[in-house]
Length: 144
Ligand code: CMP
Image 1 (cartoon, rainbow, N blue to C red):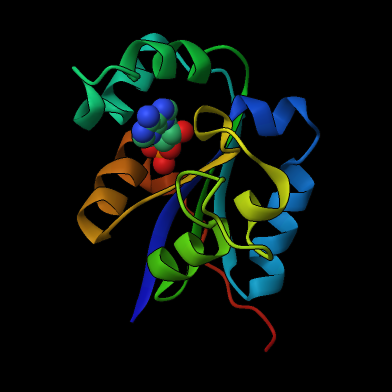
Image 2 (image 1 turned 180 degrees about the horizontal axis):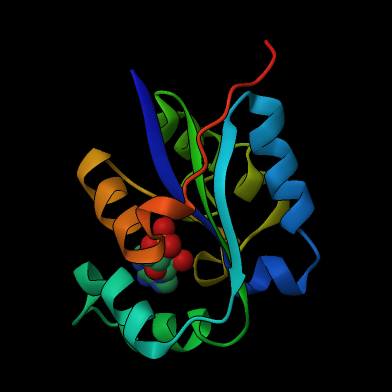
């Protein structure tokens, strides 16, 4: 089924100049960009986005990191987009991420893993609603 997933290039990706590389990999995979916003992240938004991790030992560092610089927040669409994006990103810990994946090719540190993608349909829906207004999502056709 055609799905939408929330994807964010994290502050390390922006700082390292990898926004284009990450967008390019998702485009070349065949996914369609339907919303994007380059933005600073408030503490409130970061805490809502990572609510599920509240109380974990890395939570405070994670919030500090994600609010440390701008991110590129996006919505991508395509067949099984959630799973396709997860496999394109590689595992959360870049040490285990396979070569050919974004994290496997470009990262080594779990706390600096370049990119976030929704981990399931319910999360995707919640994250998209948290970061974007419905009217920010652009419907358009694309030549095959
Ligand atoms: P992400 O997919 O954005 O979701 C939660 C993030 O927490 C994760 O990617 C990691 O970047 C970050 N993180 C930092 N330390 C850890 C850890 N020890 N275990 C899991 N995630 C971690």
